[in-house]
Amino acid sequence: MMSDYDRLFEPISLNGKLELKNRLVMSPMNMIMSDPEGFGDEQTQAWYISRARGGVSAVITEATVPINDDWHGTSHTVNARMSDLRYGRIFNELVRAVHDYDCKVICQLMTGFGYQGKHHVASGVPSAAPSAVAHKVDMRYSVRAFHKGLKSRFPEEMKLIDLDIVEGLSDEEYYPFENMVYDLIGERSPKIRSLIDGEIPRPLEHHEIVYLEDRFAEAALLVKEMEGDGVELHASHGYLGANFLSPRTNRRTDEYGGSLENRARHIVNMLSKARAACGEDFCIGIRISGDEELPDGMHHQEVLDVLGMCEPYIDYINTSSGCYDACNTMFPYEDNMMNRHAHSFRERFKLPVLVPGIHDPANAIKAIEEGVTDVVSLARAVVADPDWPNKVKAGRVEDIVRCTRCCNCLLSIFEATKVSCTVNPLVGYEKYLPENWPVNSPRHRRKIDRFLERRAGLYDSEGGS
Image (cartoon, rainbow, N blue to C red):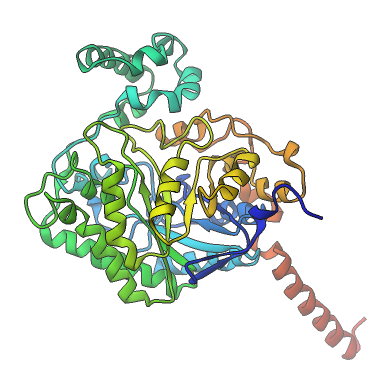
Protein backbone atom coordinates (compact mmCIF):
# COMPACT_ATOMS: atom_id res chain seq x y z
CA MET A 1 0.00 0.00 0.00
CA MET A 2 1.44 3.33 -1.10
CA SER A 3 1.80 6.15 1.41
CA ASP A 4 2.48 9.84 0.94
CA TYR A 5 6.03 9.36 2.20
CA ASP A 6 7.21 6.30 0.29
CA ARG A 7 9.92 8.17 -1.63
CA LEU A 8 11.63 9.04 1.66
CA PHE A 9 12.20 5.33 2.15
CA GLU A 10 13.60 4.46 -1.25
CA PRO A 11 17.18 3.14 -1.28
CA ILE A 12 19.76 5.54 -2.67
CA SER A 13 23.43 5.31 -3.60
CA LEU A 14 25.96 7.99 -2.76
CA ASN A 15 27.79 8.18 -6.07
CA GLY A 16 28.01 4.39 -6.30
CA LYS A 17 30.22 4.27 -3.19
CA LEU A 18 27.70 3.79 -0.37
CA GLU A 19 24.24 2.25 -0.48
CA LEU A 20 21.66 3.71 1.92
CA LYS A 21 18.38 1.99 2.77
CA ASN A 22 16.44 5.28 2.65
CA ARG A 23 16.79 9.00 2.04
CA LEU A 24 16.97 10.00 5.72
CA VAL A 25 20.25 10.39 7.59
CA MET A 26 21.26 11.84 10.94
CA SER A 27 23.18 15.11 10.71
CA PRO A 28 26.49 15.60 12.50
CA MET A 29 25.95 17.17 15.93
CA ASN A 30 28.47 17.60 18.71
CA MET A 31 26.69 16.79 21.98
CA ILE A 32 29.97 16.95 24.02
CA MET A 33 29.59 13.35 25.18
CA SER A 34 33.27 12.48 24.71
CA ASP A 35 35.61 12.58 27.69
CA PRO A 36 38.24 15.37 28.00
CA GLU A 37 40.69 13.34 25.90
CA GLY A 38 38.17 12.80 23.09
CA PHE A 39 37.27 9.18 23.84
CA GLY A 40 33.69 8.03 23.37
CA ASP A 41 31.98 5.73 25.85
CA GLU A 42 28.72 3.83 26.44
CA GLN A 43 26.69 7.04 26.26
CA THR A 44 28.25 7.94 22.92
CA GLN A 45 27.33 4.53 21.55
CA ALA A 46 23.81 4.67 22.97
CA TRP A 47 23.27 8.14 21.52
CA TYR A 48 23.95 6.91 17.99
CA ILE A 49 22.29 3.52 18.49
CA SER A 50 19.03 5.18 19.54
CA ARG A 51 18.95 7.15 16.27
CA ALA A 52 19.91 4.08 14.22
CA ARG A 53 17.08 2.19 15.92
CA GLY A 54 14.82 5.09 14.98
CA GLY A 55 15.23 4.36 11.28
CA VAL A 56 17.82 6.64 9.69
CA SER A 57 19.92 5.00 6.99
CA ALA A 58 23.19 6.56 8.20
CA VAL A 59 24.54 8.53 11.11
CA ILE A 60 27.13 11.20 10.42
CA THR A 61 29.21 11.56 13.56
CA GLU A 62 30.02 14.72 15.41
CA ALA A 63 33.01 16.69 14.16
CA THR A 64 35.98 14.45 14.98
CA VAL A 65 39.48 15.87 15.36
CA PRO A 66 42.41 13.98 13.75
CA ILE A 67 45.16 15.62 15.83
CA ASN A 68 46.22 15.70 19.48
CA ASP A 69 47.96 19.09 19.30
CA ASP A 70 46.87 21.61 21.91
CA TRP A 71 46.21 24.26 19.26
CA HIS A 72 43.13 22.49 17.89
CA GLY A 73 41.14 24.93 20.05
CA THR A 74 38.30 22.69 21.22
CA SER A 75 38.16 24.08 24.79
CA HIS A 76 35.20 22.90 26.88
CA THR A 77 33.17 21.78 23.86
CA VAL A 78 35.11 18.53 23.82
CA ASN A 79 35.18 16.79 20.46
CA ALA A 80 35.77 13.16 19.64
CA ARG A 81 39.15 12.33 18.11
CA MET A 82 40.46 10.01 15.43
CA SER A 83 44.18 10.57 15.89
CA ASP A 84 45.45 7.04 16.54
CA LEU A 85 44.42 3.41 17.02
CA ARG A 86 43.16 3.99 20.57
CA TYR A 87 40.39 6.12 19.14
CA GLY A 88 40.01 3.84 16.15
CA ARG A 89 39.21 0.84 18.33
CA ILE A 90 36.46 2.71 20.18
CA PHE A 91 35.10 3.98 16.86
CA ASN A 92 35.00 0.40 15.60
CA GLU A 93 32.82 -0.59 18.57
CA LEU A 94 30.41 2.17 17.61
CA VAL A 95 30.41 1.15 13.95
CA ARG A 96 29.60 -2.48 14.70
CA ALA A 97 26.83 -1.51 17.12
CA VAL A 98 25.19 0.85 14.61
CA HIS A 99 25.61 -1.61 11.73
CA ASP A 100 23.42 -4.05 13.65
CA TYR A 101 20.49 -1.82 12.67
CA ASP A 102 21.34 -1.74 8.95
CA CYS A 103 22.59 1.80 9.44
CA LYS A 104 25.82 3.19 7.99
CA VAL A 105 28.40 5.30 9.84
CA ILE A 106 30.09 8.28 8.22
CA CYS A 107 32.75 9.99 10.34
CA GLN A 108 32.89 13.75 10.00
CA LEU A 109 36.47 15.00 10.35
CA MET A 110 37.36 18.54 11.41
CA THR A 111 40.98 19.64 11.77
CA GLY A 112 40.28 22.27 14.44
CA PHE A 113 38.11 25.08 15.74
CA GLY A 114 40.22 27.73 14.04
CA TYR A 115 39.25 31.32 14.80
CA GLN A 116 36.37 30.13 16.97
CA GLY A 117 38.68 28.13 19.20
CA LYS A 118 39.81 28.87 22.73
CA HIS A 119 43.18 28.39 24.37
CA HIS A 120 43.85 24.89 25.65
CA VAL A 121 42.54 24.66 29.21
CA ALA A 122 45.62 22.79 30.49
CA SER A 123 48.56 24.18 28.51
CA GLY A 124 47.24 27.64 27.69
CA VAL A 125 48.25 27.20 24.03
CA PRO A 126 46.04 29.40 21.82
CA SER A 127 43.93 28.09 18.98
CA ALA A 128 45.49 28.23 15.52
CA ALA A 129 43.87 29.57 12.36
CA PRO A 130 44.90 30.83 8.91
CA SER A 131 45.22 34.40 10.21
CA ALA A 132 45.09 36.37 13.46
CA VAL A 133 41.40 37.21 13.12
CA ALA A 134 39.01 36.71 16.04
CA HIS A 135 35.36 35.80 15.63
CA LYS A 136 32.45 37.83 16.96
CA VAL A 137 28.76 36.97 16.86
CA ASP A 138 26.69 39.64 15.12
CA MET A 139 23.19 39.73 16.63
CA ARG A 140 21.72 41.14 13.43
CA TYR A 141 22.40 37.83 11.72
CA SER A 142 22.10 35.49 14.72
CA VAL A 143 19.59 36.46 17.37
CA ARG A 144 16.51 35.03 15.64
CA ALA A 145 17.96 31.50 15.76
CA PHE A 146 18.44 31.61 19.53
CA HIS A 147 15.62 33.94 20.49
CA LYS A 148 13.42 31.33 22.19
CA GLY A 149 16.24 29.83 24.23
CA LEU A 150 17.76 33.17 25.19
CA LYS A 151 14.36 34.50 26.19
CA SER A 152 13.94 31.69 28.70
CA ARG A 153 17.42 32.31 30.15
CA PHE A 154 17.58 36.11 29.98
CA PRO A 155 13.97 37.34 30.08
CA GLU A 156 14.77 40.92 31.11
CA GLU A 157 17.65 41.35 28.68
CA MET A 158 15.69 39.92 25.76
CA LYS A 159 12.88 42.42 26.35
CA LEU A 160 15.30 44.96 24.93
CA ILE A 161 15.44 43.15 21.62
CA ASP A 162 12.87 43.70 18.90
CA LEU A 163 14.03 41.28 16.20
CA ASP A 164 12.93 43.39 13.24
CA ILE A 165 14.52 46.55 14.63
CA VAL A 166 17.80 44.85 15.55
CA GLU A 167 18.14 43.22 12.15
CA GLY A 168 17.72 46.61 10.47
CA LEU A 169 20.31 48.53 12.50
CA SER A 170 23.21 50.22 10.74
CA ASP A 171 26.74 49.64 12.05
CA GLU A 172 26.69 53.03 13.74
CA GLU A 173 23.43 52.19 15.54
CA TYR A 174 24.19 48.57 16.21
CA TYR A 175 27.57 48.44 17.97
CA PRO A 176 26.69 50.54 21.06
CA PHE A 177 23.52 48.47 21.46
CA GLU A 178 25.48 45.23 21.04
CA ASN A 179 27.95 46.16 23.77
CA MET A 180 25.14 46.93 26.20
CA VAL A 181 23.27 43.66 25.58
CA TYR A 182 26.41 41.51 25.63
CA ASP A 183 27.53 43.07 28.91
CA LEU A 184 24.14 42.28 30.45
CA ILE A 185 24.35 38.69 29.22
CA GLY A 186 27.88 38.43 30.58
CA GLU A 187 26.66 39.26 34.07
CA ARG A 188 24.28 36.30 33.95
CA SER A 189 26.28 33.78 31.91
CA PRO A 190 30.03 34.40 31.57
CA LYS A 191 30.43 31.20 29.51
CA ILE A 192 28.00 32.29 26.84
CA ARG A 193 29.52 35.77 26.88
CA SER A 194 32.98 34.27 26.33
CA LEU A 195 31.74 32.55 23.18
CA ILE A 196 30.38 35.75 21.66
CA ASP A 197 33.83 37.32 21.31
CA GLY A 198 36.62 35.06 20.16
CA GLU A 199 40.25 35.07 21.23
CA ILE A 200 42.80 36.12 18.64
CA PRO A 201 44.22 32.88 17.19
CA ARG A 202 47.82 32.17 16.27
CA PRO A 203 48.43 32.07 12.50
CA LEU A 204 49.37 28.60 11.29
CA GLU A 205 52.85 28.00 9.95
CA HIS A 206 53.11 26.59 6.44
CA HIS A 207 54.41 23.22 7.64
CA GLU A 208 51.50 22.95 10.09
CA ILE A 209 49.00 23.33 7.25
CA VAL A 210 50.67 20.50 5.34
CA TYR A 211 50.70 18.48 8.56
CA LEU A 212 46.93 18.95 8.93
CA GLU A 213 46.37 17.78 5.37
CA ASP A 214 48.39 14.64 5.99
CA ARG A 215 46.71 13.96 9.33
CA PHE A 216 43.29 14.31 7.71
CA ALA A 217 44.19 11.68 5.13
CA GLU A 218 45.61 9.37 7.80
CA ALA A 219 42.45 9.73 9.89
CA ALA A 220 40.27 9.00 6.85
CA LEU A 221 42.23 5.81 6.24
CA LEU A 222 41.88 4.85 9.91
CA VAL A 223 38.10 5.29 9.63
CA LYS A 224 38.11 2.94 6.64
CA GLU A 225 40.30 0.38 8.43
CA MET A 226 37.98 0.51 11.46
CA GLU A 227 35.03 -0.47 9.21
CA GLY A 228 33.54 3.01 8.90
CA ASP A 229 31.49 3.58 5.76
CA GLY A 230 32.79 7.00 4.80
CA VAL A 231 34.23 10.32 5.93
CA GLU A 232 32.97 13.86 5.62
CA LEU A 233 35.22 16.93 5.59
CA HIS A 234 33.81 19.69 7.80
CA ALA A 235 34.36 22.88 5.79
CA SER A 236 31.56 25.05 7.17
CA HIS A 237 30.34 27.10 10.15
CA GLY A 238 33.54 29.08 10.67
CA TYR A 239 35.70 26.18 11.82
CA LEU A 240 39.27 25.80 10.62
CA GLY A 241 38.51 24.47 7.15
CA ALA A 242 36.00 27.23 6.51
CA ASN A 243 38.46 29.82 7.85
CA PHE A 244 40.74 29.09 4.91
CA LEU A 245 37.91 29.54 2.41
CA SER A 246 36.54 32.86 3.64
CA PRO A 247 38.17 36.18 2.69
CA ARG A 248 37.16 37.67 6.06
CA THR A 249 39.18 35.08 8.03
CA ASN A 250 42.01 34.27 5.62
CA ARG A 251 44.46 37.16 5.25
CA ARG A 252 47.43 35.01 4.25
CA THR A 253 49.86 36.09 1.55
CA ASP A 254 51.34 32.67 0.74
CA GLU A 255 49.87 29.98 -1.54
CA TYR A 256 47.09 29.35 1.00
CA GLY A 257 45.67 32.89 0.84
CA GLY A 258 44.60 35.60 -1.56
CA SER A 259 42.81 34.21 -4.62
CA LEU A 260 39.90 31.80 -4.27
CA GLU A 261 42.05 29.02 -5.71
CA ASN A 262 44.65 29.64 -3.01
CA ARG A 263 42.06 29.87 -0.23
CA ALA A 264 40.57 26.57 -1.39
CA ARG A 265 43.97 24.86 -1.62
CA HIS A 266 43.92 23.46 1.93
CA ILE A 267 40.45 21.91 1.49
CA VAL A 268 41.27 20.47 -1.92
CA ASN A 269 44.57 19.06 -0.66
CA MET A 270 42.88 17.32 2.27
CA LEU A 271 40.32 15.73 -0.03
CA SER A 272 42.84 14.68 -2.68
CA LYS A 273 45.18 13.18 -0.08
CA ALA A 274 42.29 11.33 1.57
CA ARG A 275 41.18 9.97 -1.79
CA ALA A 276 44.70 8.78 -2.56
CA ALA A 277 44.95 7.10 0.84
CA CYS A 278 41.51 5.48 0.87
CA GLY A 279 41.07 4.56 -2.78
CA GLU A 280 38.30 5.19 -5.26
CA ASP A 281 35.82 2.81 -3.61
CA PHE A 282 35.54 4.70 -0.31
CA CYS A 283 32.83 7.31 0.26
CA ILE A 284 34.11 10.86 0.88
CA GLY A 285 31.81 13.86 1.29
CA ILE A 286 32.02 17.52 2.23
CA ARG A 287 29.93 19.72 4.53
CA ILE A 288 29.93 23.30 3.32
CA SER A 289 27.85 26.43 3.86
CA GLY A 290 26.14 27.65 0.71
CA ASP A 291 26.77 31.21 1.89
CA GLU A 292 28.32 32.65 5.05
CA GLU A 293 25.42 35.15 5.19
CA LEU A 294 27.68 38.05 6.17
CA PRO A 295 28.36 41.12 4.01
CA ASP A 296 32.12 40.48 3.96
CA GLY A 297 31.86 36.70 4.01
CA MET A 298 32.05 33.97 1.41
CA HIS A 299 29.07 34.04 -0.93
CA HIS A 300 27.30 31.41 -2.95
CA GLN A 301 29.05 31.75 -6.29
CA GLU A 302 32.43 31.33 -4.61
CA VAL A 303 31.12 28.24 -2.82
CA LEU A 304 30.05 26.77 -6.15
CA ASP A 305 33.52 27.45 -7.54
CA VAL A 306 35.16 25.79 -4.52
CA LEU A 307 32.96 22.73 -4.93
CA GLY A 308 33.99 22.58 -8.57
CA MET A 309 37.61 22.23 -7.38
CA CYS A 310 36.57 19.54 -4.88
CA GLU A 311 34.30 17.60 -7.23
CA PRO A 312 36.91 15.07 -8.49
CA TYR A 313 37.48 13.83 -4.94
CA ILE A 314 33.99 13.77 -3.35
CA ASP A 315 30.89 11.60 -3.53
CA TYR A 316 28.26 13.86 -1.98
CA ILE A 317 27.63 17.41 -0.75
CA ASN A 318 26.15 18.02 2.69
CA THR A 319 24.54 21.45 2.61
CA SER A 320 24.73 24.02 5.37
CA SER A 321 24.47 27.78 5.66
CA GLY A 322 25.91 30.63 7.67
CA CYS A 323 28.48 30.40 10.44
CA TYR A 324 28.62 31.04 14.18
CA ASP A 325 29.00 34.77 13.55
CA ALA A 326 25.76 34.66 11.54
CA CYS A 327 23.85 31.62 12.67
CA ASN A 328 20.23 32.41 11.79
CA THR A 329 20.49 30.03 8.85
CA MET A 330 23.02 27.70 10.44
CA PHE A 331 20.44 26.89 13.14
CA PRO A 332 17.32 27.53 11.05
CA TYR A 333 14.25 28.79 12.88
CA GLU A 334 11.87 27.39 10.25
CA ASP A 335 11.85 24.64 7.62
CA ASN A 336 13.42 24.92 4.16
CA MET A 337 15.91 27.70 4.93
CA MET A 338 18.83 25.78 3.35
CA ASN A 339 16.85 24.46 0.38
CA ARG A 340 17.97 27.20 -1.99
CA HIS A 341 21.62 26.22 -1.57
CA ALA A 342 20.90 22.50 -1.87
CA HIS A 343 18.92 23.02 -5.07
CA SER A 344 21.73 25.10 -6.54
CA PHE A 345 24.29 22.41 -5.67
CA ARG A 346 22.11 19.73 -7.23
CA GLU A 347 21.67 21.70 -10.44
CA ARG A 348 25.40 22.41 -10.78
CA PHE A 349 26.91 19.04 -9.84
CA LYS A 350 26.16 15.42 -10.65
CA LEU A 351 26.53 14.39 -7.04
CA PRO A 352 23.99 13.46 -4.36
CA VAL A 353 23.03 16.38 -2.14
CA LEU A 354 21.98 16.30 1.51
CA VAL A 355 19.91 19.08 3.07
CA PRO A 356 19.24 19.63 6.80
CA GLY A 357 16.86 21.96 8.60
CA ILE A 358 13.60 20.21 7.67
CA HIS A 359 11.43 19.02 10.56
CA ASP A 360 8.02 18.52 8.93
CA PRO A 361 7.71 15.24 6.98
CA ALA A 362 5.51 17.03 4.43
CA ASN A 363 8.35 19.43 3.66
CA ALA A 364 10.84 16.55 3.56
CA ILE A 365 8.92 14.64 0.90
CA LYS A 366 8.29 17.87 -1.01
CA ALA A 367 12.03 18.60 -1.12
CA ILE A 368 12.67 15.13 -2.57
CA GLU A 369 9.83 15.21 -5.09
CA GLU A 370 10.66 18.72 -6.32
CA GLY A 371 14.31 17.85 -6.88
CA VAL A 372 15.65 20.18 -4.19
CA THR A 373 17.72 17.42 -2.60
CA ASP A 374 18.45 13.71 -2.75
CA VAL A 375 18.65 13.08 1.00
CA VAL A 376 17.11 14.82 4.02
CA SER A 377 19.53 15.17 6.92
CA LEU A 378 17.83 15.25 10.34
CA ALA A 379 19.47 17.04 13.29
CA ARG A 380 17.37 18.58 16.05
CA ALA A 381 14.38 16.67 14.67
CA VAL A 382 15.92 13.39 15.87
CA VAL A 383 17.22 14.94 19.07
CA ALA A 384 13.59 15.64 19.95
CA ASP A 385 12.34 12.32 18.57
CA PRO A 386 14.84 9.59 17.60
CA ASP A 387 11.95 7.59 16.09
CA TRP A 388 11.03 10.31 13.57
CA PRO A 389 11.81 8.08 10.53
CA ASN A 390 10.06 4.99 11.85
CA LYS A 391 6.96 6.98 12.79
CA VAL A 392 6.76 8.53 9.33
CA LYS A 393 7.21 5.13 7.68
CA ALA A 394 4.45 3.64 9.86
CA GLY A 395 2.04 6.47 9.04
CA ARG A 396 2.22 7.87 12.57
CA VAL A 397 3.23 11.42 11.68
CA GLU A 398 0.91 12.85 14.32
CA ASP A 399 2.88 10.96 17.01
CA ILE A 400 6.18 12.70 16.25
CA VAL A 401 7.56 14.72 19.17
CA ARG A 402 8.31 18.00 17.46
CA CYS A 403 11.41 20.08 18.07
CA THR A 404 10.44 23.60 19.15
CA ARG A 405 13.66 25.12 17.73
CA CYS A 406 14.38 26.67 21.12
CA CYS A 407 18.09 25.76 20.80
CA ASN A 408 18.21 24.67 24.44
CA CYS A 409 20.40 21.75 23.35
CA LEU A 410 22.94 24.17 21.88
CA LEU A 411 22.81 26.67 24.72
CA SER A 412 23.44 23.94 27.28
CA ILE A 413 26.54 22.95 25.30
CA PHE A 414 27.69 26.57 25.16
CA GLU A 415 27.27 26.79 28.93
CA ALA A 416 29.39 23.64 29.37
CA THR A 417 26.52 21.87 31.14
CA LYS A 418 25.03 18.46 30.40
CA VAL A 419 23.20 18.53 27.10
CA SER A 420 19.43 18.52 27.43
CA CYS A 421 16.27 18.89 25.36
CA THR A 422 13.09 20.67 26.44
CA VAL A 423 10.82 18.07 24.80
CA ASN A 424 12.89 14.86 25.18
CA PRO A 425 14.05 14.18 28.75
CA LEU A 426 15.95 11.08 27.59
CA VAL A 427 18.60 13.11 25.75
CA GLY A 428 21.92 12.44 27.46
CA TYR A 429 20.55 9.40 29.26
CA GLU A 430 20.31 6.96 26.35
CA LYS A 431 22.85 4.59 27.90
CA TYR A 432 20.44 3.73 30.72
CA LEU A 433 17.87 2.25 28.32
CA PRO A 434 18.48 -1.50 27.69
CA GLU A 435 17.19 -1.20 24.13
CA ASN A 436 20.21 1.00 23.37
CA TRP A 437 22.76 -1.49 24.68
CA PRO A 438 24.79 -3.09 21.86
CA VAL A 439 24.25 -6.54 23.36
CA ASN A 440 20.49 -6.13 22.90
CA SER A 441 20.41 -5.36 19.20
CA PRO A 442 18.15 -7.81 17.31
CA ARG A 443 21.10 -9.10 15.31
CA HIS A 444 23.25 -9.66 18.39
CA ARG A 445 20.38 -11.19 20.35
CA ARG A 446 19.94 -13.77 17.59
CA LYS A 447 23.63 -14.67 17.89
CA ILE A 448 23.30 -14.97 21.67
CA ASP A 449 20.15 -17.07 21.41
CA ARG A 450 21.81 -19.48 18.99
CA PHE A 451 24.82 -19.74 21.29
CA LEU A 452 22.62 -20.40 24.32
CA GLU A 453 20.66 -23.03 22.42
CA ARG A 454 23.86 -24.81 21.42
CA ARG A 455 25.23 -24.57 24.93
CA ALA A 456 22.01 -25.94 26.40
CA GLY A 457 22.03 -28.82 23.92
CA LEU A 458 25.62 -29.65 24.77
CA TYR A 459 24.83 -29.51 28.50
CA ASP A 460 21.85 -31.86 28.08
CA SER A 461 23.87 -34.31 25.99
CA GLU A 462 26.42 -34.53 28.80
CA GLY A 463 23.76 -35.57 31.28
CA GLY A 464 23.07 -32.24 32.92
CA SER A 465 19.76 -31.62 34.60
